[in-house]
Length: 134
Image 1 (tube, rainbow, N blue to C red):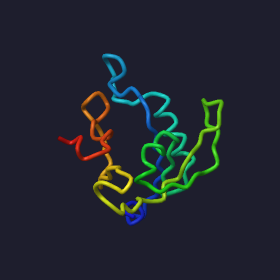
Image 2: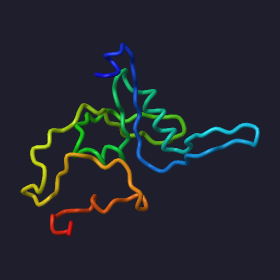
Image 3: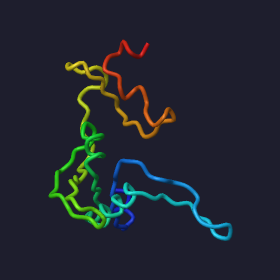
Image 4: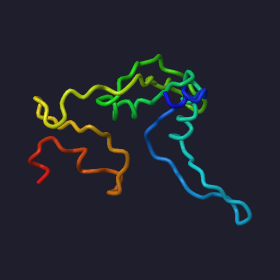
């Protein structure tokens, strides 16, 4: 809504994985950049996305499918890959019916973790019962 309200068009490709982010170059010219297969795939998904839509890879889908509603699309071929890449179009945020412990004894939080400073993982992701919080 925000981008469209400004009369702009946007396309997004979101992937999950490792990449290199840092300063590259020589003493006379340096720039900050992100490099790697994850970054390249994100650019390919962005190029394949419809205007004002978000395409994600399978790893991102698997990590967020409990929070975001997706439409599974036909897999695509991308430059640099020999296999078809499964892709998903984000449709919106799922409505969380319950915050706290569900009947299946799973914890549901009204947020999604964005980053971590503990080796790339956060212990809260592994919580299954309130007893483990103490």
